[in-house]
Length: 147
Length: 113
Image (cartoon, rainbow over all chains, first blue to last red):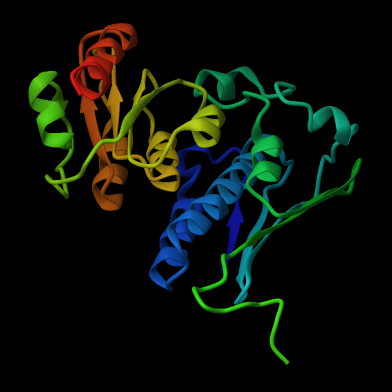
């Protein structure tokens, strides 16, 4: 699944993530994994809307053992990633905080709901976040074992 | 407790259809910061908030909440209602404050049990 998210499009904020969660549930991904992936996608989608210069893409791949989510934009880039990852730190504009965004928990929530989390960012070039949400092994299946 | 019983006992406004009258509410969460709700609200909870815009519906859907209860007499706009209807999220309302409604809900779900 791949969605283009427009900068500033608050009116549709979260709609891609809601579709992603729905689709994951429909194809048989368990509820807890779909929920975690949905939360990661929502925070990524809102980051594109609130912070990106020209929007970006939200991509989801479903693998047998995990859901892979990539959020990519072309700027402005994050100056200090450690600071941006600090719970409570936010540069959200007032219009976003009025709507309940900008708690300074977006990246933190993405990481907390992921089993793998990578963030790359260059000022003037953009930011790419890759998250992996592991799916629990079906009962009776040991992914580590086998031939 | 069933969502329909809570609606009745707290005399809540119902802004959208209730797709599953048997839906069970396991608890509540009060908050207006969306990321805190995503981080902390348990699936099946009733979310009490003053936020009343369409993004709230997506948060409720992603988090797996049973319903959104908008307090202080605020009402959902048409866009929010439409999104809630199409996604099966229940929107409720009360003229009371979050403090009052949360206290009464706590009484129903915890104290009375």
